[in-house]
Image (cartoon, rainbow, N blue to C red; front, side):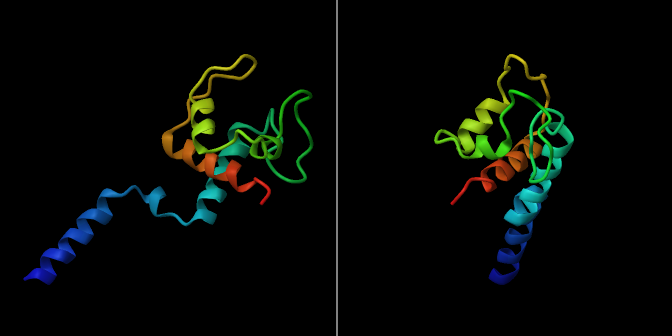
Length: 108
């Protein structure tokens, strides 16, 4: 009986977790890269080999390597209005994937 109750609990817990949360880090980085290309690449350089689209716009590589860049600072930045930036509405899962991607660009 205990085994059945435990199994039911595990299944219920698994169903309550969003699919994105179960994704492996490489998959989240890949999803974040895709979001970056779709939403950000018209102004920012978001991938290696991409030409620099904006004159005075930081690349994601430069942003990732700022000493102040961490998950919280990126989350706050993405939720704030900024002069010169479009007011994009990004879902929480896309925002989290984008943050994971940016942080993956940080030099070790």
